[in-house]
Image (cartoon, rainbow, N blue to C red):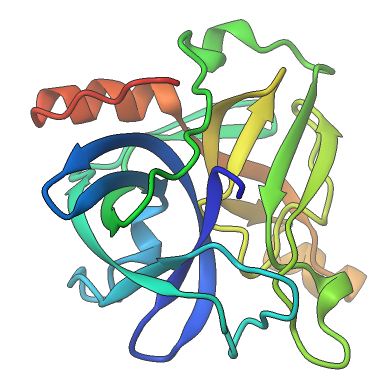
Amino acid sequence: MPSFVVVVDRNRGVGGCVGTVARVVPSAQGFDAYVLTAKHCVVDEHGQRVRVGVAIPAAGDEIQAIRSPVFDATVVYMASEDHLSTAGTVVWQSGDWAILRVRTPTPWPVASLYLGDPEQALEPGEQVSLLAYTDRAYRAPRPKLKPHEHPFRWTGVPPEIEQAGHSGAPLVHNGEVFAIFTGATENSYNCQFLCKARWPTKLRFVSVATIRSQAAALGFELLSK
């Protein structure tokens, strides 16, 4: 059982984003798992919270046909204001994160979280990976959910990172989650018109350090494993 999960839109029954199990505590009903994901995965275009659930997919699960149990999830904390800081091809975002609480009968594995500040510590060229369940390679004959990783060198902008279903996905360095993926900036409209193609030029992330700091201000302590 992995420590990253699929965030499910309960109204549509679709697995659309990724989450990271960051903390688990005992509760009267069993255990409470706290899951990090992107804020835009749990709110609509008007900023209203949508009904979401969390699942750990098994073999045979599909994006629109999840047979594994889907647990109800409650948004307990999320960012309010957004600020962007650009460093080359990396855009650090502060306002696109949310923490979900999921009631589970057994404790889920917890991811190891990076304790430092990746904005200062990560050097270009270091090996990192994005963990996800959906991918263009798994869409035929029907879109499947399959755990996999996309390894790449830090500050690189490989096109496979920007995909539907990768929002909220954890970024891992040396086995520790240091950020979540929130989106990308694409080449300009003029370039798209002339080149007849689109591709990402910058990738957006929210660091775990930012989430930890903002969550602490809201009264929630985000602990590493």
